[in-house]
Image (cartoon, rainbow, N blue to C red; front, side, top):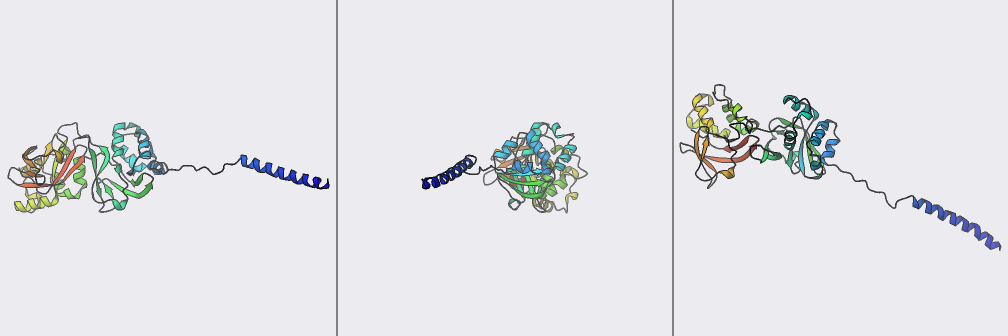
Length: 325
């Protein structure tokens, strides 16, 4: 009996302890739940105080889901100041004044496929997700890495290589508008002599004004066969003159016109052998066998050395010899 009295308190303590353990177990999960975290391109923009206008623009253009769930993308992200300048320069009082279709295409002009860090970028052309009104093709963008990184000659990277789960973000200091053929000619130093010719003070034709005409307004769209600087250098030697200033205005005007096709966005794949190409300055002949070439009225042959630089109002093909009328 004495032993029984000793056992009862021990049993009571054990039962109390067991009950206490059971109570604690009922209130606990067997593991800590993981809270999913993301760092998409949209998350990067949401977390940056100087990208609030970009976020608002993405929401208006219904691009948030795309940039949060797809990829990989390289996004050139304009700052708030960049958007303010864009709105002011284009006569918009606020983001709400920008038509949705226009805003969408401009935003897509800041998106390149793939994950391109600053070290992956080199001077040349890439394609964006914007669509040109001249042909429904992807818009080109000119990347200049000669001094930092600059796009289309108007927008520079201020903060590079911001990593995201579905791509990479580079902050830029200006909104990259939809380019015209003039935009690329000015931005690409390969065409600096061509630009000097097109803008010579004594020309009777306003080439810059004409070639800036938007698609949907005559004579756009354009196909421009753009001679390189070396091509102009060879022409000057061929003519025995020291510079563009030695070429009289009627001749220079006629020479420039024969490099422009109006009313057509002609891809390299549209060219065939013995194809007559009608330019603003007369007919030339295209051939593709053995490589794409253009033959002028004097029998001079120019090689097409780079193709399909797509602007919003036309397309550019680089050539290695100036065409003569």
